Every structure is written in C-alpha cells, then in structure tokens.
Length: 189
Image 1 (cartoon, rainbow, N blue to C red):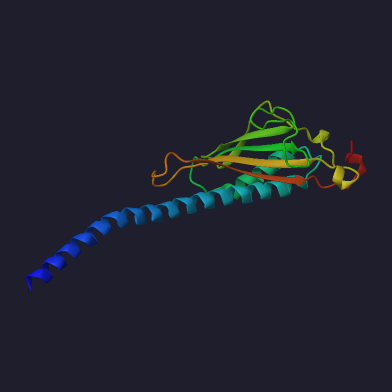
Image 2: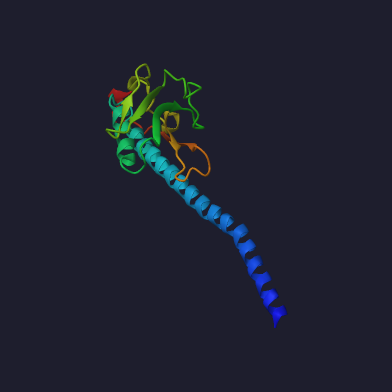
C-alpha cells in the first residue's frame, strides 16, 4: 500500500509541473488572440472609413468643397468607433493608376494632396495649412479612363490593451477611386 501512495504523490507533482508550464502558454495564447482581434477590428474600421471617403470624394470632381466633404464623411465613419489616440492623420491625394501618390511622398506632399490631423475631442479632421489639390486641376472630363484618381489614406496607431506585446503598432488604410466624369462640359478644363 505504501508503494502506490508514493506513485500517486509523484503524479500529483508531475501534474503541478505540467500545469505550471502550460498555464502561462494558454494565457499568452488567449491574450494574444484577443490583442490581434482588436488590432484587426481597428484596421477594418480604418479601411471602411477610407473606402467611404473615397467613394464620396470620387463623386465630387471639380467641386470646390470635395476635400472637406470627403474628410467629413471619413470622420463620420470613424466617430466613436475607435479609442482616443488611434486615428492620427488623413491624406487625400492625387493618385496614379496604381494607387501611388503623383507627388511621390505622402509624408511631405504639399501639392496634389490635402493633409488633415484628427481632433479626438471634436471627432473631426482639421486641415493642415500648406497642402492643396485644387479642384480646378482635377481631370474628370472625356474618357473615364483618362480621369484622375483620388487616393484616401488614414494613418493611426493601435495601442495594445494588455501591453504584453509592447507599445502598439502603426496602422493605415488606403483606398483609391477614379474620379467620376462631370456631367457638364462647362465644368471641364
């Protein structure tokens, strides 16, 4: 009888050691799945907002208010859906057929783009001075395939909820739409 008691005590110790090894792995896996789910959600919200803004902006070629209307549509799509500090900037830019900015770099563009910063308190975008893509310069006449393309880029930063994975991750979303042809030849350049 004594001998089987020793075996049982040894097995209890093995179970405790196995649990000590497996439990942290299961906890890390659970929190990692949770963290990446939140990252995926935030990225999807940015992508949806970029597409909504691009769809609206592409229907307003040669309209002097296209940039503010587009920024407002993006802001409405983002308002209240993300934690404060997630959204950072919005850039509306003239894109080539492959979705790349015509001006070369979105970080430093001053022509063929509008740059906005996000205001967490008001849940809206504020225009950055010194950036422009004039509506009068937009090509939206004639053959639709010759029309300019509007690019929408939203940049943000996702903070990890638990902090296990570090400080966070920069996220961004891009959408590019061809400008719809204007209906009046008077608006063409």
